[in-house]
Image 1 (cartoon, rainbow, N blue to C red):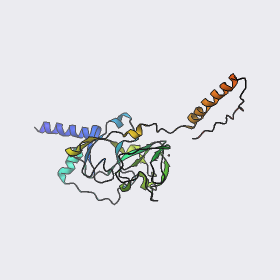
Image 2 (tube, helix red, strand yellow; image 1 turned 30 degrees about the vertical axis):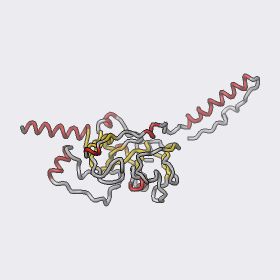
Image 3 (cartoon, rainbow, N blue to C red; image 1 turned 135 degrees about the horizontal axis):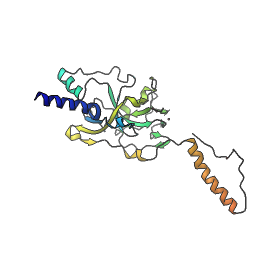
Image 4 (cartoon, helix red, strand yellow; image 1 turned 180 degrees about the vertical axis):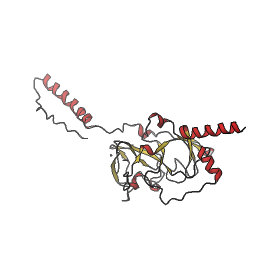
Length: 257
């Protein structure tokens, strides 16, 4: 029996460390996607294979720059401490947060007025935002912004937009409000408890649109295609279109972690 118990504890510890870990939801910042008291299972395996957070994912991450300063923490009893350490229950003393990834490295994320949140100039339809909230806030503490996400960082926001101290409100910290990818524990994939709240946490459809930031070279190429076709049409009609070498006349143009 002691041997079986020991094996079970080792397996539980390995699962928590490398595969899946349970976390409890302590606040309302992700309502109604997640409610206080929910238990979520977090995939910790895929990051080991080089997978990085994607737009739309709900992720758990270590506090990047004292975002939880001043927040009360519950002191676990010895049994809770042991069970949390081996992963059989959520750890009560880890300083982790859970938010939705809005922007990844290279993205431009912006809020202007109370309209839709934009990523690389494309508006997001966000049905997961808490009912009664506006996707963007008018407050001058961070609700209005336009940021570029550095490589290796992500920009995160809560689904309860008017009740979430997320990347918007930490732009003065050492990371500029961005969360280092290295701080991400994993992606929340399932609401496992209570049974009445059981649900998966897929990436919303609004992130299926092409949100990638266009490179300047790509824009120049896109502009050159109609120019070439125009020249061909004019040449077929007996007229030669002239373009000064080195000056095609096609402008290139080239963000919140």
